[in-house]
Image 1 (spheres, rainbow, N blue to C red):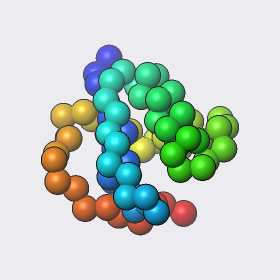
Image 2: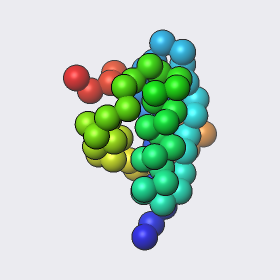
Image 3: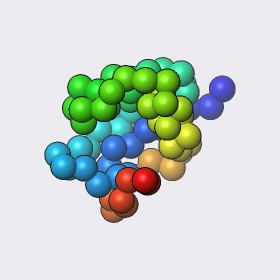
Length: 73
């Protein structure tokens, strides 16, 4: 299995979150969901886990600089 990342810098947020989580897909989804609940006020749900899973990127695409884009509706 290849490493993936969830990068909060990818999307605009009220708190300008800079957290990036990298690891195996299941680990990243679990950690990112916990972060989304604790730091961004999302409800922990199967839908949240599915959304995060769909937004994962290859860890190899990590870069120090990133311009935030609007969160998909």
